[in-house]
Length: 120
Image (cartoon, rainbow, N blue to C red):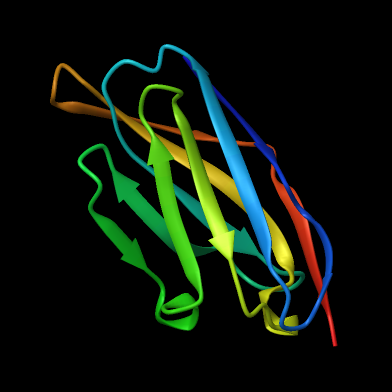
């Protein structure tokens, strides 16, 4: 199995920056994509950004140009650099990983979440 541990959340003023980290451990072989999702109170969880092992990225429209996702495959770690933060970015941010067993069977794993709060 895969365990994901997030860190780097906190309180920041609007316009500021934060960098989230997510370290994967356990059976990390064949993890093909990692990403970040977020969930604000009273709202559904939404995709923020994803990155494949080859470095291909995808972003939600709401964060394009402000957030950057990256990964260090050797360390099995994914990062989310968040700049120009807005109050609407306030949410619990969850790390996600997909492991493709035998190249066929997808397994999904989630971290425990880290709180990001942006004050106006």
